[in-house]
Length: 143
Image (cartoon, rainbow, N blue to C red):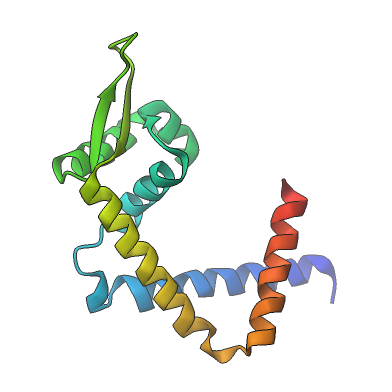
């Protein structure tokens, strides 16, 4: 089997795993009150990278600043994000997580881990180690 065909199969498998994670995690009772996938994407990004401007978020997600503004407005309204003015230039505004936002991120991460644990139940511990090692190798070679 050639590498391109293998890459296609891996892509299909990754897509199927992503769907499994969503259907087994995002629709369960444990995720009640957890924000949608798009909203979680913004929250996860800010959790990982710290406070970001609308422009920076739009660049990260490849969407228009107006689309990000709508998403951020809803997250601010729900008290998951807060706007922070730049002390030197009040025109510059960044958004960061609130205490409630951090709590929701922790809740979502815990649910993702539970979901992955259910998905990976079919693998032995050794197979999981191999899978993690392969992921780490791919990530390291891409940096």
